[in-house]
Picture (spheres, rainbow, N blue to C red):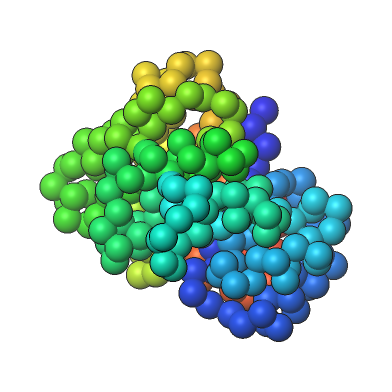
Length: 249
């Protein structure tokens, strides 16, 4: 059984006092929610402040990105070791916004995954196609290329999570239908079977990310190859985020 994972990606939102209030709110609500691994990826500046409020390992922290070098003259970057020291267990890599706005490619993401593993961080690897690529029938080609490029030479250590985020559905209000999402997730699992091994691919949790909210989460999370969600905008309000977790029932 793959334990469900629901991750909140705040992107560049919230100040530290707001973040502390959000964490206090979810800590009160989590005991009444379905069993799942809950991850919070706040801005880097919030990590150390939030760690003391993440009690009993019920809420785990993630970095939104990292650089592949352990240290050095890389102004503005964050290493995996820095994320670990701030209390992170996970790191999100290859998010579509990193690919789009900061021109990250699969080769660089591959080096980041390798570095994250060396630092003992679990990786949430994001893959997904644009609307133009989907309309051109290139979804599988694009996703397969991203997986192969990012995971080339990466040893399976049981610490990999993949998030399928159709770029056309991020922040647009559009959402893949449950059938579309399941089809993409099944393809990702099959592709992981050829990259890692069939046995390893069955243990990898694959999340859906693309305008997930409390209205569509139940149908999406009910699909056989969807093991959770990477939630953006709907994670900023603790009540909406908890409603998504509750839809696992």
